[in-house]
Amino acid sequence: MSTIIGAVGTTHVPSIGKAIAENKQNDPYWRPFFKGFDYVHHWLAVQKPDIVVVFYNDHGLNFFLDKLPTFAVGAAKEYRNEDEGWGIPVAHALAGDPDLSWHLINSLVADEFDVTMCQEMLVDHAVTIPIALMWPGEKSKPIKIVPVSINTVQHPLPSLKRCLNLGRSVGRAIERYGKELRVLIVGTGGLSHQLDGKRAGFINKHFDQLCMDKIAGDPESLIGYSIHDWVEQAGAQGVEFLNWMAMRGAMTGHVTEVHRNYHIPISNTAAATMVFENNGAAERKAA
Ligand code: DHB
Ligand code: FE
Image (cartoon, helix red, strand yellow):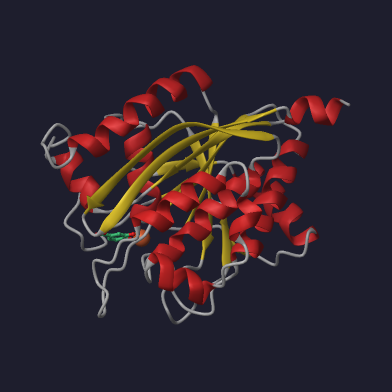
């Protein structure tokens, strides 16, 4: 049986890739953001996950507006990145785990989440930037991934509740998995931001604070917001918080926040980095 050790929530702003390539981690603009990952590195070194299940949104590299699944799960042996036009280096391919992917896909469909299954899948900055932040400087990353893509791009989007429940289904499936893996959940994107239109540059610190305060202990209190409400409060791209809701849902035990860094702005985004531990699930199962 696999163990869900906890989760990391983080932004995925592409210009972070440029800052890494140019070694700007200690520049005044970047330092408050990158410093927030010192704790993450220490925590990962102690926790030693084998695999990451990453909830993210594709921005047009793998899916485009012509065909855009609400939920898609990778089932590939490896996941390549390609040039997305941001002027950042193309990341090295990440290893997959088709066996775990198919287990998750089977469980999700049995739970009535009719996901798109992808035996070939490119992953964009919403996967590669968080991985580069968590495991800096290593060409061959020490982990495998299962990418789970959530549509945050073309309306209608799934609700916060639906994404929380998607995560719960993934969490239950991981716990039932036959192999003993230490699984880390990652949710990427956000927090508040809007990249275009009249409100380009919009950030809502007060609302972000509420989201960060509620996500560990009371995620249900956020599901009353409609997607329309969320766009109003968090900006058109602030809906990437759907990935964080799925991440939270996948933590099956008692969830505690062990780290938080919040910094405004990174590019156009209010950047949050949070670490959560997931305790007590094994004891509950044994009881
Ligand atoms: C930015 C933020 C995003 O979430 C993204 O996908 C691309 C760019 C930004 O703030 O620049
Ligand atoms: Fe994004």
